[in-house]
Image (cartoon, rainbow, N blue to C red; front, side):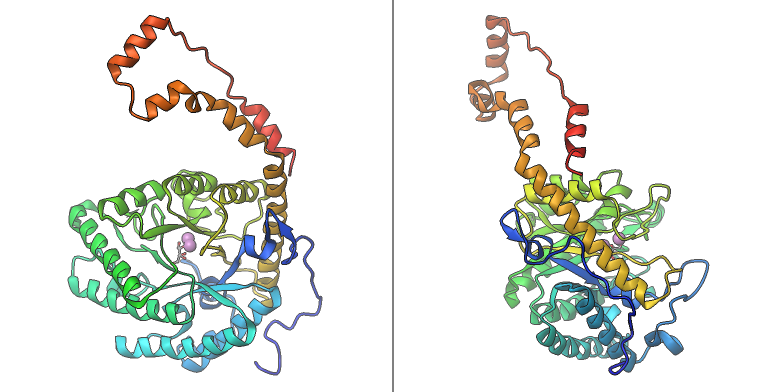
Length: 429
Ligand code: XLS
Ligand code: NI
Ligand code: NI
């Protein structure tokens, strides 16, 4: 591995749009986009699906792929890719980076050993950790959920796993800690007590938040909403559901969301809807930029390729003030026929390039200001006397009824101008 590159490219590539140092809307492109490569799809997944096994045949998966030697080999390849595509961040689950041991203590030690490898590689390369997370869904002990499990021993086991990888995330200078409720949901209500499970989840998240303050972690804790898959119904359905949950357990100031494009569409929303709502509710954190397939109803985790969709998402992120601790994670995987190491390089590089291009489209939209102007005019009444008095709680139902009658008010509808606005958007693509 060290002598011969795993990726061994013959054709050099270059970015057409991504210029990390170029200023766009007051920050460099690199600062605006904060790209991250995910470990699980690119290095832990062997290309299997429900109907067939491994297709990629990576050396670190040979003979079952369970050794620490292979985990180190995998880390070498991962950091080689980050360098090749010039990705400033990466993301991982504990189980992506190191094999599970015979006991939790051994598993945790394995994770920590690779953590040491990461620490060195991060110092050498300057690559940073966008977020870490725990895999609380693959092992059979989690088949009925982690925090929402009917057995409190599973809750405790999950807590122990989270503590280890959260501490590691903190030590590696990670900028966020993510919780995706993979099996926090149910298959049938016949065996599920929803109320109990929600309280268990609320308790678990509270413990994570308390731990954050105890260790002095300065980053954000993020929940990643998803409506279903692997569970039939998942509690963190979408941004609105997560916000209600956070409020119920008093955590809405402590926890934000990591929004994934594919999860948004599975929940029946657009990506930009979820980002805009999170912004409106004050919980926007980070994104997973991976699309679904319009004809398939599951999480296909494809690299982004739709410029207008990406530009709209990046526009909403600008409206939210841009990323702070968050970033743009490619929670995306190759198709299982893309078996060459090169495919991994091309997929990431082209996705980054297209995101950069989308950012330039966003820049034009923001600079033109057409949308903001239209919105200002559309809502202008709410900034006037009547609007301010209503929102300021100065008018009762009686007051309003009397005022409308006395003045003989008869509001006139105005055009929503949707077609004009859609054409305005396309002007910048
Ligand atoms: C799965 C999720 C997962 C999270 C991290 O659908 O997207 O990969 O991003 O646990
Ligand atoms: Ni996903
Ligand atoms: Ni994701």
